[in-house]
Length: 384
Image 1 (cartoon, rainbow, N blue to C red):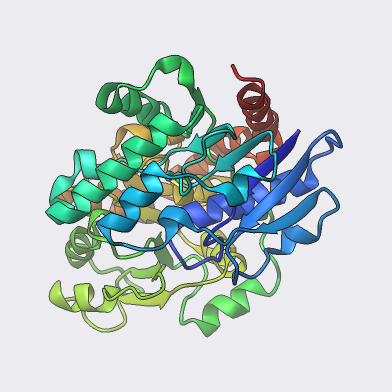
Image 2 (cartoon, one colour; image 1 turned 60 degrees about the horizontal axis):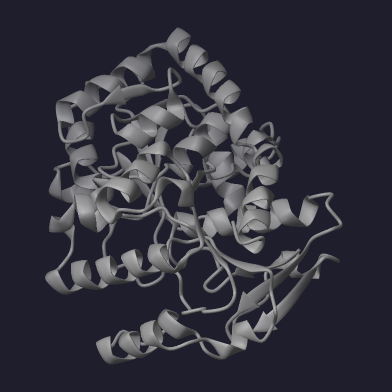
């Protein structure tokens, strides 16, 4: 097969976890041992090539028509929805995979595989303006309709597609998001020194990696942190990472609004994948109070790294973690604080959750998932 991979906006720090998913996908495809397949990375005219583009079975095609990826105006969107994308169609690909919820080009002849993560506007509409809700619903529903096959990373997302969009179940394949191999690596000798350079003592902080969007629920987490009882060595430190390009919100502002003293929360902003791995391996626990997830990739990465997890009691996170996490009610700051206290003080429980997490994460390693993904490509290319 000759498969196109839509890599528009592949740079980390651009739009969040879907970029991490895309980069993991490219790494997995580059290391696969199937010589029967080749992959065409679709990029915008001025986008830098990802490192994987140098692999033998990879090639790059520049697409001048970015379709729905540019132009927020409704007229431009309407033209794209009704038109076509000859720049991609002329490549004669067996199928094209859009791995980030949205189909950016109205392809007519080339089969499309769409990985769908995000239906937040359906379940938490209050976090969007009326215009945003309308635009997202239009684009997301259109994308799912136009795709030949849809990959859902969780049973929860698959069920939402059927119930909310009326998507035929036979059109959906459940393939979890893969965890990069870097997350399974043991701690490096230099990581402790790097952490101390960030003002973090290994094993003495909790980690929350998330851009401060409203649904990531930082405000409730800050309130919960204010309820934690002091320890002999001082109050627990919370390290927060994640800030997308142009993000106007700051975790520091939320910490001050919650009355937390300086130093209780360390806002590290955007960090590299390598540094995030060090943070996961050095954390006493991961706390994840999100109000909505289609899958929960940071939680999956924590499981693989052996970082004990306390997270929201949401269907996709229950599905992901099984018995390998301490769940809490994300709308209740007291519930969050109780879960954090239990894990912070409970060394035996942390060890148990770390062991269970590593075991569950083995099923999420890209080498395990890649055959399932290639089977979806083959099914789409074959017209099933």
